[in-house]
Image (cartoon, rainbow, N blue to C red; front, side, top):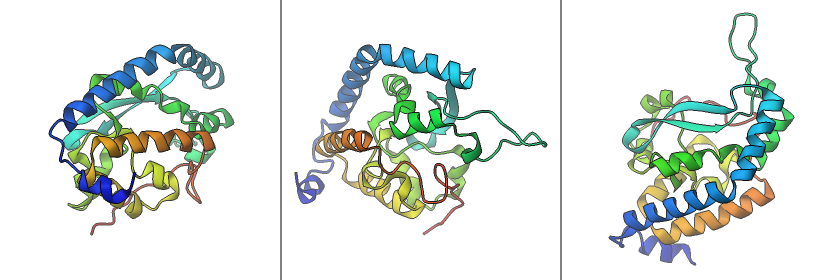
Length: 215
């Protein structure tokens, strides 16, 4: 399906919000049921390799910047320096954690966030609360939609992108979203996960902190 067709279809379907929510519910409920043995296995392995807690929870901004608690499987140790400050991500991220991230298995508990309605399957990734005052007015538009497990930026570079590139892609999605685009993103995400590509940025274990780059 061409990009031009997807753009022409943007927001033209009045049933899109309803269809998007139905898609979220069907996929999340089905996935939680089908993947329950895998979820339990990962939980056991996290407990064995990293200890408690099994889940990592953190307040993130959702639709219109409203805070919600996002949950993921833990991938890092809670190691601190002599002053009690957490070590850099690269020092706390274990081989087991890298495996969970490279396969995106750490994201599976977010299916519960989708079921609750805090997140959607497709949308800009939920970032940190402290980034909210750093966004330009244009960048802040990423909060006009629910955050997602995957999104347009995730299938077009993910952590290999600069912050500006990532936000530009997020805003493109906000302006052009429709059910056909969502299905395309979900399909491409599957192949990204299989190929385990674009997991880390060039010089960081994950993404470097966002320090603001207003436009």
